[in-house]
Image (cartoon, rainbow over all chains, first blue to last red; front, top):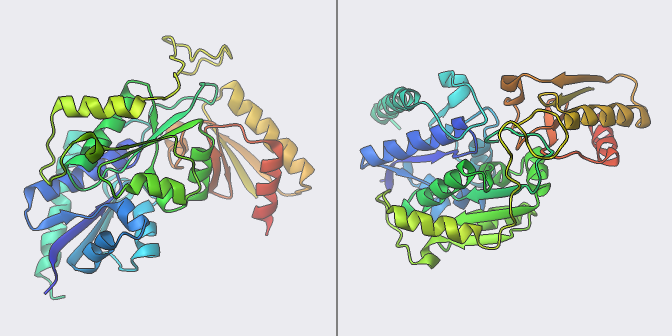
Length: 127
Length: 143
Length: 81
């Protein structure tokens, strides 16, 4: 029996897309008691609690900010587990990356709804 | 990457929050966003440092001063920067400031201001651009 | 080899382009295109800290500073391998 139902790793980078990804992830966790965040830099430094969270997740989700895909690279290098779901703000949701830390609330809402829908669909699938 | 500016701006002060999955991690992120908004520092991507993306690490190495804001004593942001070979000039740990870690994602404005002050302690002054002029005298019209 | 200079056109960006041209010549590279990218959404496709940025064969090499010509030559040589 996996310790965690849904574990989410997110980018929280220095552009609108990074902060948007982070906000989507954080709100999903706030709104769904079965969802939890794993600290991405903890994975990057091989912290056992971070690696364990990913290993013990029934479903593991990566929310990327932009096509650089830092999150996926870190997870691949340190955990090796492939995400069950991976979304990225630019390619999947058409968000234009800009040199600002603010993002559109409407984008956050629609992306959050879509990611939630994808997660719930995955949870009903057999392992 | 926030607030695009050209290289003629003096004193690149970078701030890297851990942005971790707790109140203190999220406060670290909020503090870094506020510092960037105020023009006192520039946030850059910690994940890029963690993934050792060469052009990104090089860009961070080119800055004059780097601040790590960590939510808790695990100090992921500081360690990630050090692991990438980057000198950390100021390391703040929120739990060391007496802020208790929890998973509520809420905080007081007072505590946030304390984090910001702690991050700025000892930081060099940033040359503030005048409206419409980056201040370096290069007449390039960048902001 | 494709070299991109990312920048909205300020004197530092122009200087970087000049350095890149000299570096290409000194490295003895025959086939190199140098493109100056000035549109913001194209610049933002790369994970830059700030302009100017230097990209070689779609890989960001540095941003937010003017690299020394020797560094650019080194990156060009690495890209040739």
